[in-house]
Amino acid sequence: MHTINAFTPQNSTLCLIDHQPWVAFPINSIAPEVLTNNTLALAKTAKALGVPTILSTINAKGGPLNDPLFAGLAELHPGVDPIDRRNTNAWSDPAFVQAVEATGRKKLVMAGLWTEVCLAQTALSALRAGYEVAFVSDASGGLSPEAHERACQRMIQGGAIPMTWFAMAAEWCPDNTAPEYPRMYPITLAHGGGVQWAVEYIMANLPRSDT
Image 1 (cartoon, rainbow, N blue to C red):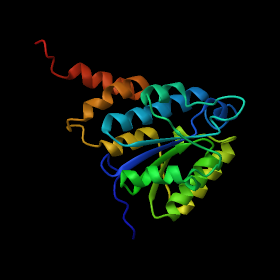
Image 2 (cartoon, helix red, strand yellow):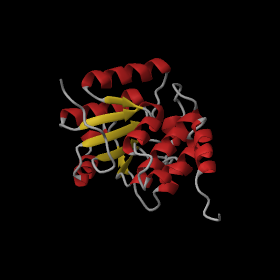
Image 3 (cartoon, rainbow, N blue to C red):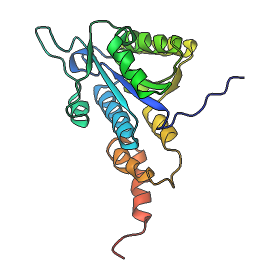
Image 4 (cartoon, rainbow, N blue to C red):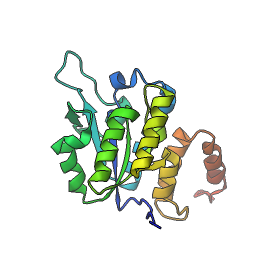
């Protein structure tokens, strides 16, 4: 039986595909505020743990209107110019593939819009190219719940691993005694929903520096 090794900050690359306002307008598989929350949580976790992040957009420039990254992603990666494409399959863009290859890592964590188009096409192409792919379903969205679910099924059938942002964060940093673990606290407090109460409890019981 094939054994899947864990994704770690040392062996993973995060690929965020087309998290743009205009692309997001027709999304109906996830509430807008949940999509935004989860995408930013995933991106912040990657940055806090040193996971390289590749940002890609589609038709963001060159048309009558600009369609930039979600503001929160742009603020998290100031000065980074996303790889802008004209093809729905990011893997068909040499600049995207080169960016992935430059990390030297064979495990890709992907999230994107729309699940059934750009994300699925890119994930399946990466799998065919010999990469191990996990897709973060709750930081992605489709035109309908069915479109999103069918795309997730298709990627799973192709060999991709379904994840959520919090599951990915826990896999990247599973040891709560690790020195980097406290970096997760502000992210969970801001984006973790009910889990923030657990973090508040932990922090209330940590030794105080002023005692």
